Image (cartoon, rainbow, N blue to C red):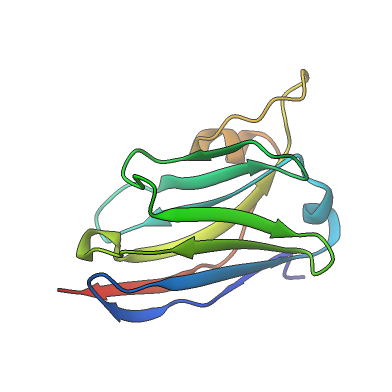
Length: 131
């Protein structure tokens, strides 16, 4: 059963834009925390953007610098990531994730937190930015 399914990846030139979507289903739709991560060849997986499920708080990796925006459409059970002004360093597989909050209802935004808080990962979508 696929609980998180990404789409929207592709190849663009430097400065281009892409919009990624992640359809959630089952228990992932009620997870407290949702987000996007990425993994480039030979590098560790890193956080791109995160959001409290249904809440306004958003967090971003330092490298984002105002170029990306994470959002949700609850009517469609989707999490989106709008990426603008893409750079070659943004080339990676992008994965969406959904995981639980801690006992105080807070989200933490690391890969380890996703894994230890009953998190789910999608299979990922490739983004390639040509120079």
